[in-house]
Length: 313
Image (cartoon, rainbow, N blue to C red; front, side, top):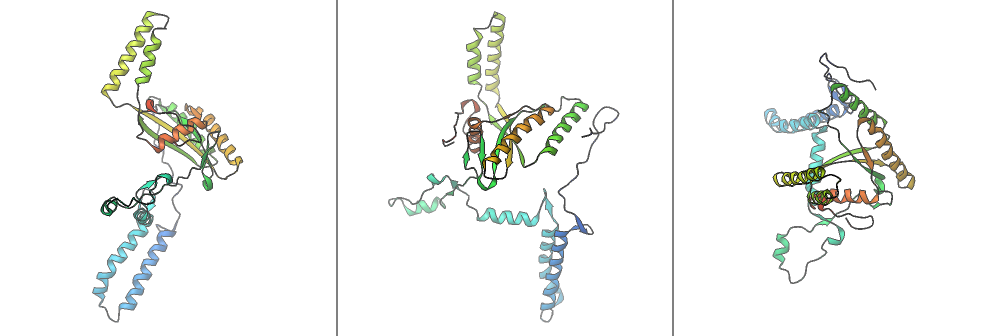
């Protein structure tokens, strides 16, 4: 892949990214969906006028038809963040009908005790619906089985300080990442999250090992660094940034799980060219990542307990 062009001062020139998912325009500036929607609005308004003309004055019909036509035009033409207004309305209706409180099946109450006041049960609102997650099993190799959605392999990805690189270095990193995206043969998701981090165990281990250093100056430096970390933790809310790479393969057979694991390993090799350290997760590490994703407020990273496959997380 060719590197992007540069200006005379060495900074990379702006490159416009094509919108490859944009629908084709079939009638003037309108796409096929927009043209069909506008045609339906026109036919509906015209048919309504033909039916109402014998009994309704034109001005009165225009008063009633204008809001309907305006709504139809808005649904046909308006888009935001790649979604048209019809999709947003459908999503809002699904959200309004969906239960707002979910709980794992063992924790869903089936009935209330007889001694409980019915007014309290009504005030508590509707009972939580069963929480059904797509994940069915985490096998011994760290591959997540998603049932009809296939298999998913997870990997922890490092980060690169892009701002400290020169223009040519930024272009090389971007080209390496673009090659990784172009080589993807299936769905790939990049998840970025931040969680509180506890440095207490790290500073305690640093002080414990400081006495074994070969020189007193090294011991003093280690203790000073531990004191600095303690002051830093007291004055700021420290966060750990985690980037997780999820690679998915369709199919329920073990071959799909093998392909997902192989693609995660290939991603690690491809992203190494972009100075990104990618480490595929085994079963235990994947369980810890999933537990943190399901319960982000479970506590600082330093206090998190390990989870294991086959146990609730």
